[in-house]
Length: 120
Image (cartoon, one colour):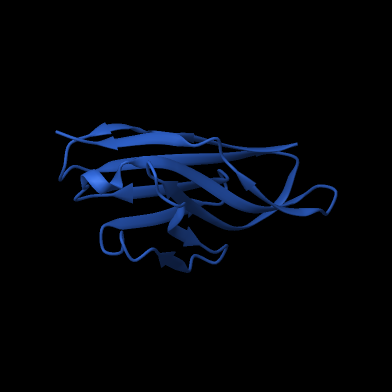
């Protein structure tokens, strides 16, 4: 009934930048907080950034100062911009969203993930 789809991933050189997008669709009544997580090879999943429905943001320590999360409520989208990318930023990036569906059921949904590779 509800799905999130990421786009905009790819290969980036160290020091470069990227922009990821995530679109929510389906039987959605409202969307609360949205966020981005990542999991690198052999690593635990970690928070990259999150944003509340009111626009308050939170960033993981490893990306703070290099990342910006934003959202477009009308389009049901959340974005992640990163710059000064490092090889250790290589990971699968997933978006998520807290959704109240049209049945009034609240659930945290996840996108399928998209690969970001930072290498020269």
